[in-house]
Image (cartoon, rainbow, N blue to C red; front, side):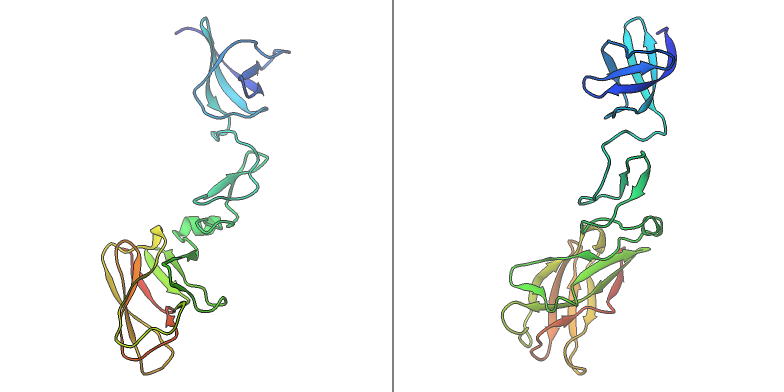
Length: 216
């Protein structure tokens, strides 16, 4: 397909209109867009041919969006008003807060999802998980909403770890309790469900500090 390749500036997003470099007015013609969402003032590479106009590229390689001011779930990076990518600011629980964390394979501390009847024992010790360089870490104090964990009683699926912090195989792990002589066994299965399997005396909360495991 013969034609001319040139640069242009977006003058209108919908319907899409562009002004070719050197022209004084935008082209009043249907413009096909192969790039994606574009914003006014975006610099684009275009192909002008007998059948119309095709936008084939965006200067800088970043599709234009409106200015990003906050993050949403699963956001890793945002585009600022100057068109530059920046790390998400950690507003949502799934966000990676810094470029350093992105580079290091670090999720940061992520909230767990409690089943009905369970919660964090104290607000200052929230239950969270974190994966860093292939190792998952747990922290916090978990409790029942009504009463202690009864002795010699199993409590299945108390809470679920974030999807990025789940092991490939079921893990059997020692957890802390309120006494120095009473231990507890927990399991973490490959769906992220955490269960209390064994303890010999009643305990008001379950300690998760110091627990870690490989993701695979």
